[in-house]
Length: 394
Ligand SMILES: *Cc1c(COP(=O)(O)O)cnc(C)c1O
Image (cartoon, rainbow, N blue to C red; front, top):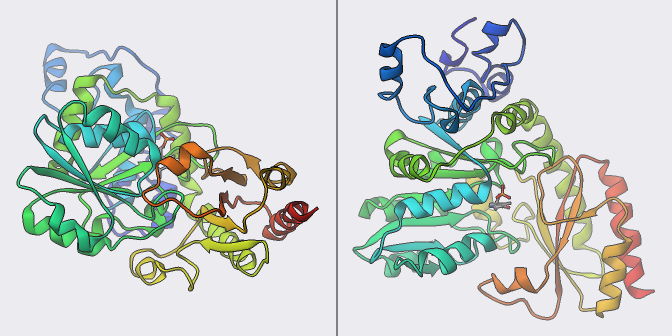
């Protein structure tokens, strides 16, 4: 009972229920205690000295580098992702910036997939480039090889890409990178470890906006980075030096979210495909961008790389006036208007100028709208979208 973490044979549902509970033995509770601390204290000089020989962010040292609550979440996440280790960061974007910054240097070169999450692109353009690290973009595994230079220190991808939901051939990217000894980092937030086995596909550094599905309740900001000790060595050192800290409360809540991750993901997936399939045949919809749909250009890659698709997905409306578009968005009753996704509730995000600027290819006059399909009854969600689409023509 005490060695909960030591059974590698557990299947995912058993892991989700039993990992991350080692310290609960101390409190005779089901859940591990929530330990908040700035100061960590040691009973003897030997133990104090010992704390500096351990791996930072993995064992008690000082409050900034985490308490037992943080370590519980990180160990559980590493196991679930079949990785050696995991580093928590204060948000998904901070996890991305930690990985990119740790690999950037003046005169250096980083390759980033062109359709990544807008703030990832802004970090490259507004922070890394001005510091003298060249950041080039590429759009597919086919064009990657030509962009590599002797200075390339990292290849960064996101699958599928934000908003446009484009797939990339992860196996091919990783094979090219491996030939050259360049690490591959991937924003794996969409698939989560439930549907996307990043490390098995060859990804060295997998990044998760745990703010989204992993926490799943729209009340925590958190990033998680998984990989081998060697792959995360520079990122860990960077986090230590810049003072990265994650609150124990955020980790405790994310551990709670983890317990139901598989169940929630299955429900999101069945509802998302139901709503997306229905939308495909709606006359007001020009296209649905969702790799789980057989008609999607990324469908074959999605089938090869994922075991499910939770959404979010994007639709392109037939062109309409701004006033009609506003009637549609404002007319949705069950979809709240916001930029996030991954919680239990449905969300809609119309692409505005700021989102479109980040896209490598501008869409034509159709309007892009991203839906996150929550845990509501999908029939109610369909009805809601249907009545709101009717407002476009009214
Ligand atoms: C939301 C999001 C992030 C950023 O996560 P935060 O926790 O909001 O900082 C990163 N990548 C993708 C794909 C996202 O959707």
